[in-house]
Figure 1 (cartoon, one colour):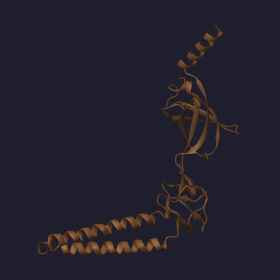
Figure 2 (cartoon, rainbow, N blue to C red; figure 1 turned 120 degrees about the horizontal axis):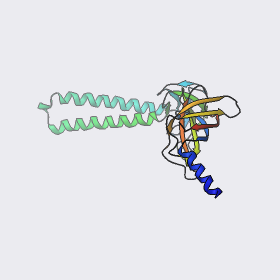
Figure 3 (cartoon, one colour; figure 1 turned 90 degrees about the vertical axis):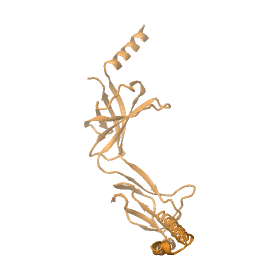
Figure 4 (tube, rainbow, N blue to C red; figure 1 turned 45 degrees about the vertical axis):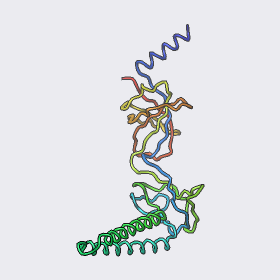
Length: 235
């Protein structure tokens, strides 16, 4: 009888709204670990921990003088082949079609070689994938890095601006927790309570832990902090 009453009370609590106890960790909206996709010796490191970077900014480079020379040679050959094809194409009425096709093929091969040379060269240059800040640096000038087997991580970085609370709660409340519901939380070790709103609910439950997850946006907090709080699902 007591068991039935307990289950009934639990179902009534879920049906009419509940304060859902949750834990959370503060994370950046974007974060990543960066590594070279080529092996070599680090030639130059341009940033340090705490450096703010823009998308596409060069962070570090490997020794690549030989590849630069190859790319320059390929570029010159592609330019020459393109000009040669253009010159003969302008008088195509007066030359053999097979001869024109050979110049066209020569140009296409030269352009393919240029793209390949530039691709290999670009693998020796590490760039920021998005605007953000460097959070860790694992390489120094002169270090040997490898792209085979255990890849050498060069940097970690994260986006700046608003952070997110990654919230975990009991799977019993999956479907009850909704976007827009208030979340009252407290950082571990601090007494102040804060409020935000649920901005995302994950569509699945972790089968091992039987925990559901949600997110909420916050500002003025560093990533890495954690704590606990309550999602208010009642009206």
